[in-house]
Length: 127
Image 1: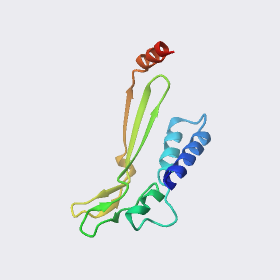
Image 2: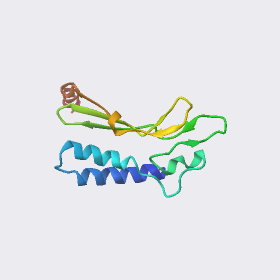
Image 3: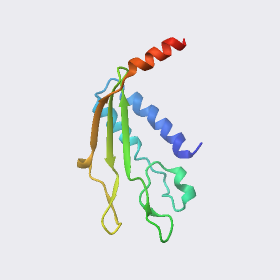
Image 4: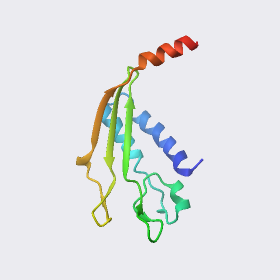
């Protein structure tokens, strides 16, 4: 598997263990923190993108647009189906296509309810 997947899986486990019993907002922050991990060497070629989770804007093709991590998303789902979707801009582009660091004030949060009763019924019927 790719280095960023291996590293991300370990960071995910670490974040869950560290936030056990903590308020939900602390878990969200730990998960966003995990998504900021970068390798020691920034990617210089497309093939190196597999080595880092957060990618600062870079020019992959001389005449193409910048490539990088535009947003990060954390989705939490409780056993009762209560879910929250948190999204943050990591990099934004201005009218000329220049990259700027995103502002935390632009975080979007959506809360919703999933129908888990249907899934439970389906699993129980299959058992």
